[in-house]
Image 1 (spheres, rainbow, N blue to C red):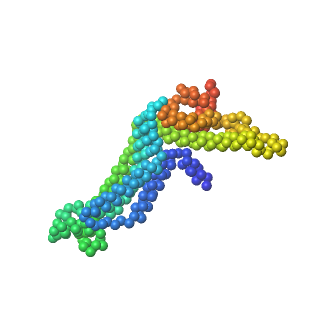
Image 2 (tube, rainbow, N blue to C red):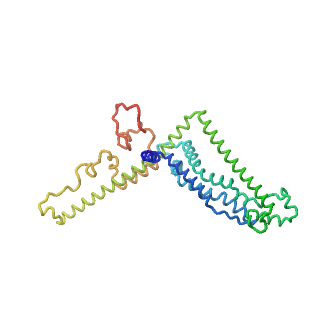
Image 3 (tube, rainbow, N blue to C red):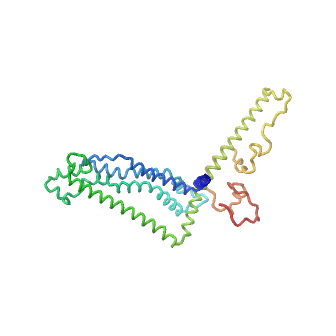
Length: 345
């Protein structure tokens, strides 16, 4: 049980692990969908190619879009690409790295579907049965061109009376199925070779640029997450204070109208609002930077500033950020304090 808990915490803390898990889940769902799909070729010369290619390419397109929707980094990448520069310059290399990462994960499930369809061969036989050269098969020598086209269109339907138990149908179907499997295994081998070369040759080159882009792409994702969490925390605290002030104002109004029975009975009246800035919920030290934004106009300006002019990535050059208490989980460090050698990021 402890191992499952640690694994769950790892997936929660690592966005990359979550995306890999979603990618694996989509690939598994793809295999299940293909195995449960009922393939029925129309066996008509005009529609065989349309049906076969549609079944070969349309589900992968849908799976690709699902992969993009399920990957949170795709939205973060577009936001980083379209945001105004402001005080922080945009690095095209980071956007390219994020785009490459998103596409690699989104293409996994479509490739699984295409490879399964090619190795199975039914879609390929249905799509290209009418395009086979009849001169490669001796059984078509005594047929007219119209009869040949009709026969080839019926090849995917082995139960049809025209092609049932026909050696020519078996030959054409076997030829197309072998060609489909050859293409599928070739693509599989090519993908394995590319992945092997990428994994083995990458350490041979300078890793500085790769590490930098990987770090800053993770930073952009985590920064947006922390901003959303801080906004939710501020919204909860702001709503809490608004409700408390509402009850305090109602208490004053009831006292002015003589509706309070506590005063008439001689009981001490509680204070309208807790004394001090920390009296609202008893945790004011870490929320001073949240309570400084205390009106709708300030919130709107804060959100607009975050979008149009994000702060520079230099805390030393921005003393307002360091001294204003805007850090999410770190305490403010006094000038001249010696930091430990190991710092958790």
